[in-house]
Length: 192
Image 1: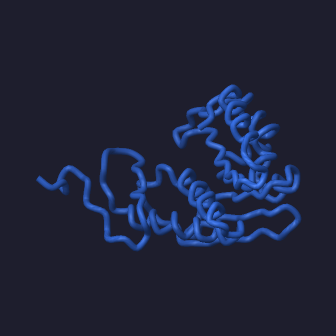
Image 2 (image 1 turned 90 degrees about the horizontal axis):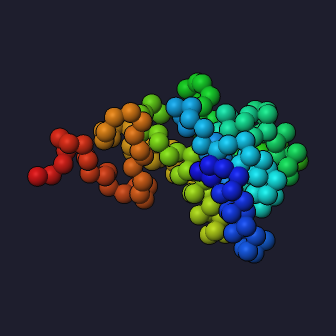
C-alpha cells in the first residue's frame, strides 16, 4: 500500500537503481474491501507515470483496474501502457473464477478455477503478486509464473477455508502447498 504520491515516488526512485531486467510486479492496492481509500489520486498518477513503465506485470482486481485506467478491459490497459496485466477475477460473480493475463498484442490467457467459499481471503492479491514475482525471480516465463501462482493461491484458499481465527475476513494460512494441515489456531484448538 503506497498511500500517496510521496511514497509512490520514493518506491519509483528505489526501483530506478535496479537493473532494467529486474522483474517488478505491482499489485495496486487502492481501496480496502470495506471501501476505505488506501491510495490517493496523486499516488495513482505516480503509479501510471513512474512505476508502471518499470513493471513486468500489474496485478489489479476489477475495481482497481477501473480506478487506475477508467476501464474494466485488461487488454485495453495492457495495450495502452505496454505492460502485461493479470486481471484477477475474485470480485466477479459466478461459480468459476477467471484470472486473465493480458500481454500487449496477444490474445488473453485465462486461468480458471472453482470459486471457493471462505471468509479467509485477506491478502489474496498480495500473495498472488508475491508468488508471481518469486516465480519470475526463479527464471519462469511470465505465463508459467502466473499459472503457478494462481494454482498456489487457490490451494492456500482451499486449505484455509475452515480456519477460524478472529472475526470478519480472516487471513489465508500461508506455507508450502502439500504440507501437513496447519494447526488449528482457534481458541478451542490451541494446545494447553
